[in-house]
Image 1 (tube, rainbow, N blue to C red):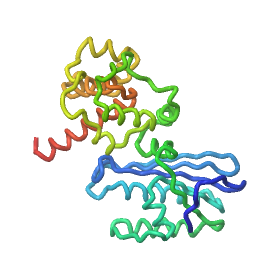
Image 2 (cartoon, one colour):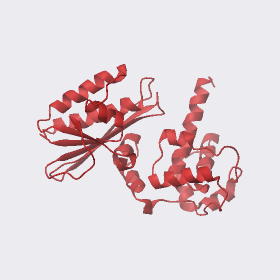
Image 3 (cartoon, one colour):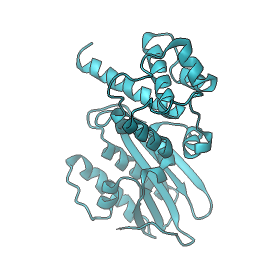
Image 4 (cartoon, rainbow, N blue to C red):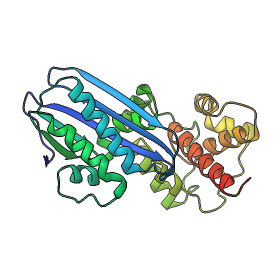
Length: 274
């Protein structure tokens, strides 16, 4: 097994992508996604998840997705060659034998994945790719629908607040982070956790009718669908997502940011016994 650099593939090569994560990491929901583009034109996708558990980590999720992918491939009776692509350099290099497997929790997973790879007569190569090149597997792992994944891959379909932020209303560093996330089209738990205003800003006090008017009907409809209900928590989450949209985040990213913040707050309350 070896690591393949980016490049064109000759005819007859089957291709697979995988991604996995714990949300939050460690200990959160374990999500795994994988998909194939086979040399005969067939495409297949799959996903799996496990509930939150202290043993769940991003790397466990990555290996779980890879094992699912290889099990599916062997189960189809495909002979290879197979090119496997993922955005975890650690897992890719470990599978190629270039990095040692030092974590006790990953040893058995690496051995299982390696045993499956050896069953593929035509051989398996591994290629590390950037996260933005792995969006479909990432979407499957996160539990998003394929339609949502397609939206995230097509910036022309992004929905933004009806009223863009006035020039200078968002701190320069925050505006730069928001622009990068919009260009990426996705936001990981860690990225959402790091996205902070650093205190109150021009949008912190916007609420009620003013918030609805500035975000716009379509954006608010999507936010309301994501945070349905009349509880205080649902209202606060709707307002949080709307304010992030006013700061310039695409609506689907603003929703995810509010979900991440809500999960962080819920975990803090659990630890504090409240």
